[in-house]
Length: 93
Image (cartoon, rainbow, N blue to C red; front, side):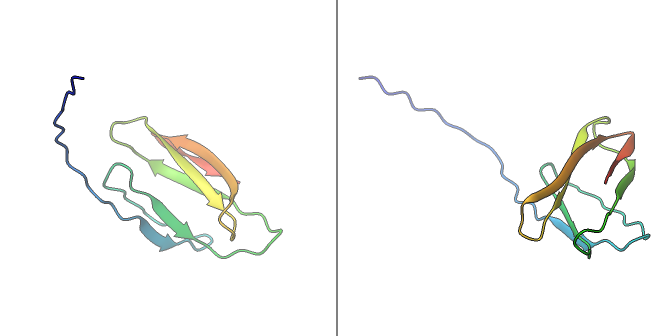
């Protein structure tokens, strides 16, 4: 039995999520500097209320790449999700 060995070399980078809190009517700037980095933002709400989240002025490198937007319920399951791409942004209701 012939066994081939391969050598692999690579660099790993551990990225921490960017966190913050959203306040109704107050814009928040967010900059993600690494591939795979996430923004995790919280906001207060009341069950049964409607909320809209707008992403404006979105830019990606390279341009035109989509981003995922997800709102989670307090139990961690998905309430709503969509994608947005630059230039521009998106809206999640």
